[in-house]
Length: 166
Ligand code: ZN
Image (tube, rainbow, N blue to C red; front, side, top):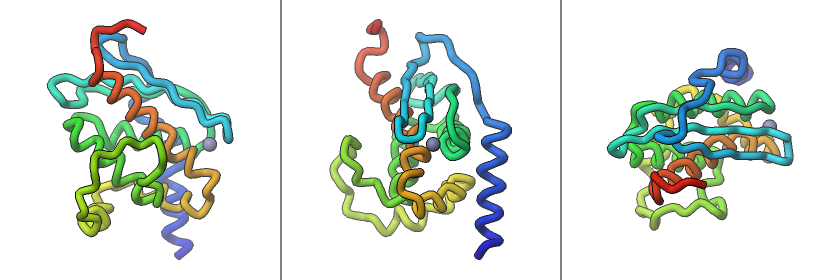
């Protein structure tokens, strides 16, 4: 299916060349989290503005390879305007797609025991499916998940003490 792979490559390059929601947000009210993938040199900064349990705005900055940067761009589109619960579910789905949803450090809430549903929901990931190809290159998986792990950091930072300064 090289046709499909070409399509996926186009999607990734499109997000890399024209990143969505790139920039910064004032902190506070937004929470800022930084991620770094030393294996590849990728850097991602996520600015997350959550209000009443809903992602009101999200912006990313950073630099790195096409996988890390396009994944960050897709991430912003996937979570913008979404309830935090749904965002966490999308993160899990995305990692599940890359077969690493049981990665250490991911404090997943106790398993629901219903994995079959997750598979069927893959289509909801839209452009994110384009990143599925990276599972063939394990070293690239960290590139693809960097923005998502940084997003989780921002989410937990917000849930603790929003008013606390660093
Ligand atoms: Zn990378």
